[in-house]
Image (cartoon, rainbow, N blue to C red; front, side):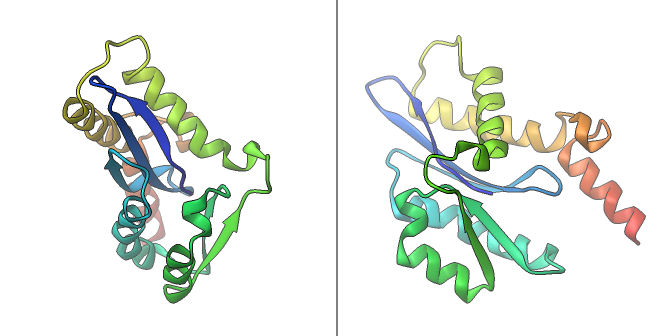
Length: 161
């Protein structure tokens, strides 16, 4: 699953985050950060995710997004097709389809952004990178048997072996 979210920084700058989440483990497997929500910025997170997706995929892989222009662009769709990834998009005005990613954005912003003073783009970039590492490796989730996404993935792979 993927989406884009925006943060305000000092000096009227903005920071955009484009993560890709493995829905089975709730793990952020790749992300990119940018001052502008360009196509290349979104393609960067996809290119980072591809080796992980190919390594983990036992069956047909799907990537879910909203109907943002990035995800309707021919370059995005062609890359998915070349990598045998099925594209799934929300119906127009159906935010519930993207609820998992919106929940992640809500947690991230609630736990490290809201209520804080605006900071520079560079400082916020480091803070988000640190949070994603924390989210993947330390932050426990009840639906993952009280484990972090990485710990759950490790546990699940040991059981499968």
